[in-house]
Amino acid sequence: MAHVDLNDRLRETRARLDRQRASAGQPRAKYARLERKEARVREDQCAELTSLARSLMRDRVSRRERITENTLIRVAIDLLLAHRDQLRGSDEGELRRSMMPEVPDFRSSAVAESGTSGVPDSRTTDSPDFRSSGVANSLTFGPRNYERPEPTESRRGRRS
Image 1 (cartoon, one colour):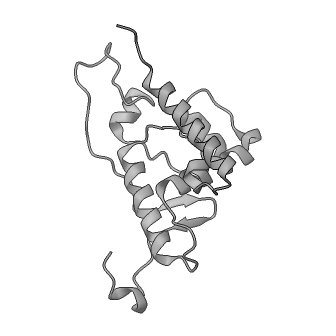
Image 2 (cartoon, helix red, strand yellow; image 1 turned 90 degrees about the horizontal axis):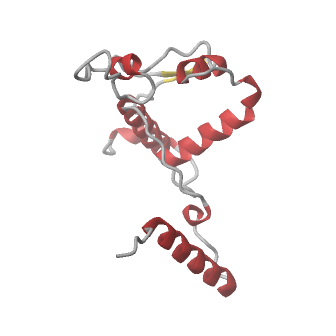
């Protein structure tokens, strides 16, 4: 039986549908104009990213566009690319410190001990060390701290 690459088939189908929509003059949704790229993130990063996106969604003035985790990831990528000349290092920690020397290393102990992959070095241990992360409630970006804002009178009645 021949091997069918479903990713290629899906990509071809999406491209065909995009061409059909473009020829019909239909505007495409923002997500449909973006490329898909997956990234592995730490548990603490995922939780903080979700919390930050929700907080920004609640606090936004304009309701035109949703703020999602993907929105924040795209902003972070733009920021990284805008400062690519500062990027130096041969591992994740060095790269992070070259861009943001004042930001603490938020990696959990299990990831820190095993490198950026989160997979323990099989030469040094038989089982992974899954201790909990001691991540703070705030993230530091340059001179400002982002802390989850306290509820205001207008938001107290809403559900979080």
